[in-house]
Length: 132
Image (cartoon, rainbow, N blue to C red):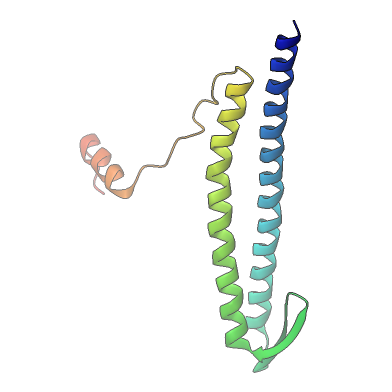
């Protein structure tokens, strides 16, 4: 009886830990989306200004730099955010399936689907008799 309770407790701890990872990843995705949007707003404002130099906050520092350099930094940061969000989203799919396995539920249907490539679509279009 005691061993069964320990196994049940250990199983519940695993479920809670996996659910916590999923919630943390979702919060991180939201934070990265906000940062990416802030980068987009900053780049738009830089494109609107007529000044050659601008002030930009990098962490706790405030620096004055040429608009072109600031725009490049924002673009690099936005690209890095895109990469991190895509990685988190793909990892999230795996973690959700792992959680469902722990809960003894079947995997979410279609969660691991990937879009067809251009080459695959052209083959499908040829089979259907459509011009690509």
